[in-house]
Amino acid sequence: MPDPLISICIPAYKAERFIGETLASIRVQTFTDWELIVVEDGSHDGTEEIVHAFAQTVTQPVVFLRHDVNRGLPGTRNTAIAKARGEWIALIDADDLWTPDHLEKLLQTARRTQADLLHSGVVMFDSDTGRDVETRVPSPEAATAFPLSLYLGSYIIQPSSTLIRTTFCRQVGGFDPTCRYVEDRDFWLRLIRADAKIAYEPTHSCRYRQHATAMTKNAAAMAEGVAGVFERHLDWDAIPHSLRLERTADAWFSAGRIVLRDNPALARTHFRRALHHQTGSPRLLFFWCVAVILGIFRGKSV
Image 1 (tube, rainbow, N blue to C red):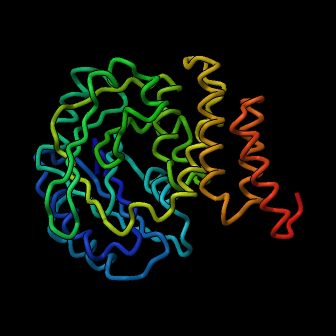
Image 2 (cartoon, rainbow, N blue to C red):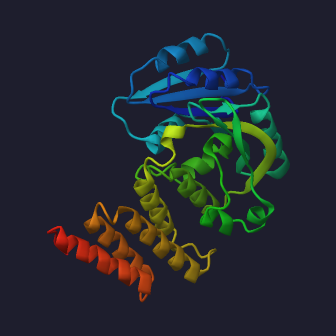
Image 3 (cartoon, rainbow, N blue to C red):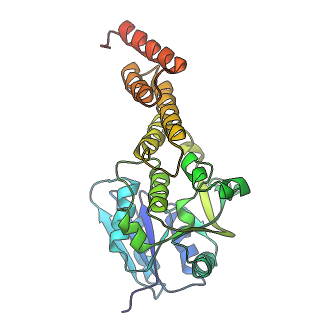
């Protein structure tokens, strides 16, 4: 059997509630030369049965894999990418949706632009009501300022909206398994730094499901993840040196403030890293002192 042009990769964790809708949106794609790879990440619900039932309704290859132990979203995507046979990787999470022309439009743009990383516009919808809540597209300002806007976070790429050359995915080593909350932002930065060409397809063909219960659940881990991404890209010469230092320091400062009340020792660690990148900042010194004082009153070492 010849290799498909596109490998669709789905990471799945306790996905049985929504993955049927996701698969249905794949079944009706107008572009049909694809394979599907689903990796279940350590959970055991009805996902496998749903995927196997789906496989009986399509002629395209469907592969189901399982991690015996949960490895997190980045590692699960990497397992799927390693199995892919296609020239292109199309990412979609197990609860998101595509309009029928999603793959076809992205491929047309890829052929026209010779891009290596493509993404569509995204319509965010409420999981409980199905109501559209936001349309996410690159602003003209963010597009003009690229790649600085990607580095700063104002140019947002939703993973489920992307089509990526498989060679580039593997060239940069896939997603970083240690970066569990902002792994996509780090991945896009590494792709661009590897000279991947980006293109935006202005069709709102990705529907991203928002879950109300997951909005701010991991604020501290998210802040630490953002700080870690800035720190990993401190050597990127395309970004002004002073801005790299400033953003890295600010990110560690923000992470420290979030955990200050509950974990002064961890806050001190974050403030120390911030001070390393931006010495002499009065506000950093002030919060460092607060963390030290809190640690003393709680009987912890400084």
